[in-house]
Length: 317
Image (cartoon, rainbow, N blue to C red; front, side, top):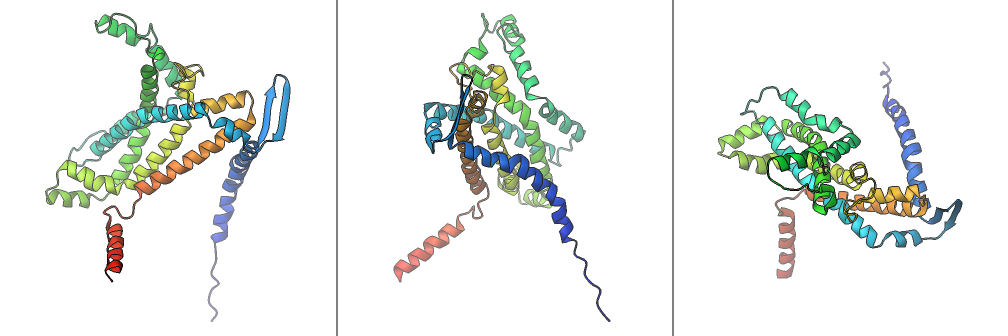
């Protein structure tokens, strides 16, 4: 009796993937290749005249890599750090609090919605709200004066500390909800048996959090850090709206993407392409280091110790 022919449905998986690859090829891969190609050409507008495209090699890369580049890289990372550190700290605290079975918090779904709501507000609307709140004649200044805390209005947007702090606070408020939900999902995926065993062994809540919870959710932490880094390097809308595209005072909140936007508006496609390539390289390097740091397969150093022992044995022999 002949056996039944096996039916392979693997081809349907590849067929369903075709729309994704077509979309990626048309809207991502082709523009990426064209951007890299433009970075090697002189292609800009001078008055009403279009100059180029003329091949100039690495000239655009050399012109972009200057004092302005280093300043704007520093600005971007400072703004990202100001927003990310409180974001990850608050998100971890909220996630640990809401997933703690001993607290028996009611209305968990309601709190999740409230936490996530700021993420749904458009950055432009958020920026206009903060611009109105912290303006010289805004509610914050009026409340501080009425309470007798200050005597004169504070120019928040006229100081480096004030403008950077406002941008950082906005980024924190916009994204901490999304981070909290992801970390909450990661912690809920950890078996409760692990926490019960830790409690029976006499672990305190602090020890349980740092020695059990954090190591077990390390992949999600790595994902959060990598996506936050990429988002930080792409920071544009908030400082653009708050400072009307100037990045003042003293261009202290002028980000890399704001600089790239000015190249595209000029337009100067050559230097814009070179700056885009630099951003791609920086993102790749940072993500690689974060991934290696957060996904170390030998956290206790046993492999390194074994390697040293082998070397010592060979020397003794």
